[in-house]
Image 1 (cartoon, rainbow, N blue to C red):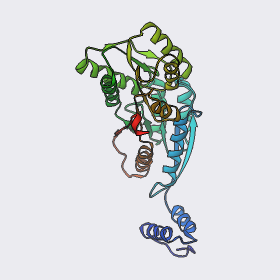
Image 2 (cartoon, rainbow, N blue to C red; image 1 turned 120 degrees about the horizontal axis):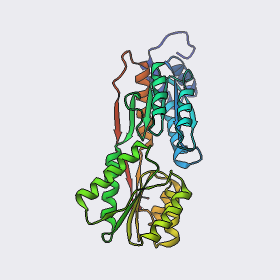
Image 3 (cartoon, helix red, strand yellow; image 1 turned 90 degrees about the vertical axis):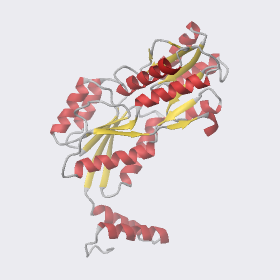
Image 4 (cartoon, rainbow, N blue to C red; image 1 turned 135 degrees about the vertical axis):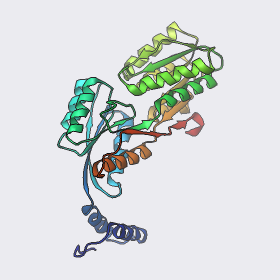
Amino acid sequence: MLNARLKVRAETAQKVAEAAQKIGYHARGLIESRIRADLPQLRLGFILQKEDQSFYQDFQIALESAVVTAPGVNASARFEFVQGQSPDELAEKIVAMNGRVDAVAAMSINHARITAAVTELKESGIPTFSLLSDFAQGARQHYIGTNNLKVGRIAAWMLATAAKRPGKIALFVGGYRWHGHELRETGFRSYFREFQPQFQMLDTLVNLETRRLTYEATLDLLHRHPDVAGIYLAGGGMEGAIEALREIREAGQISLVVNELTPESRAALSDRYVTMVISTPLQQLCADLVRVMSDSVLADVQSVPGQLFLDPHLVVPESV
């Protein structure tokens, strides 16, 4: 096996590699290289949002790990990032993957130009997978992420439970082109309508997932509605809301629910300015994503488009 003179079954080679790792054999790296060299080659493309944000940095690291350790394939990863919500920029990034990768996974708004770009890849035999927020239904291969309708209801339950008294409830979304935010808003409002009608739902605020806009909008919100009992950030920009609350409210006066565990949200949990974080299980998501991408490319029969829902991780102050 080590001198590459004889062909070894993949299952046998894997068992040898695992045994070498357990005993600390000095040539285990060579064994693992031999195994990977004999596996099917797979090029995977990933398009994520803002490269400077800690969540997407963690996302990239988790994806890189999942690609390197993917069983049964010798996979490589290509990453692209976008900074805004422009459908033209996102569509260009998707189309540019054509010929460079065997499958694409992206975080994207839902827009006709995005659907056209995904359709173009599909016609070239390249499947596209939507991450965290669905898009291009009918053209994309799979959606992978949390059930956003349920995420919205979880956030609503937490705010209603944590509120010291009935009051006004505020909701921020990144924009109405994010299908996931739309579903979270639907679940959020439906919960209050069903179970907590004594709370007053305010009009939804759009923050374009930016810290500065969220900060200014939160200050204005609390000035106009001093009796706000809870706030939910359905998308990004939570840093701005946390900053505003720190400036003009005592910890715990207003319940705040945000998405994704980052250094900022972890610190705000510890200080009791955030009531709960609804976090994506990145390690599981990335492992499942690479698996379904591999299966879709290597399978003899194309899989039926579908959805893969993951349970979110719920983090409260006592968890950190």
